Image 1 (cartoon, rainbow, N blue to C red):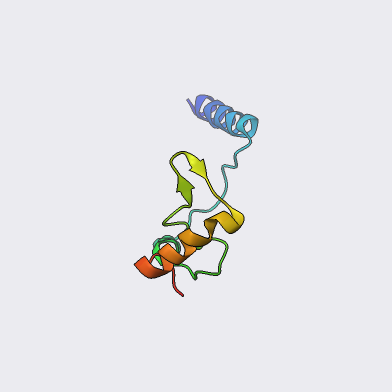
Image 2 (image 1 turned 45 degrees about the horizontal axis):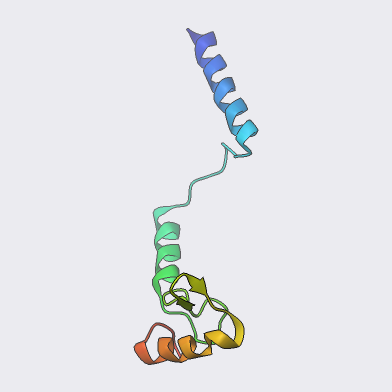
Length: 84
């Protein structure tokens, strides 16, 4: 019985290595998970690269970037989706 468990653990480790994933990484604590979720949920500054994460600039299925996203930054600032 013990060898079957050792073999199954070896098989799981082999599958993880084949998929390029790690098994022995520690899980974050509940406090760390909450802090990350709170930081993600808050409104970013309007001049930051992720300013439009809650209001992505796109017209239909076409995403916009650069100077074409400027009206969307103004809209996000007015509606409170980013902090001016």
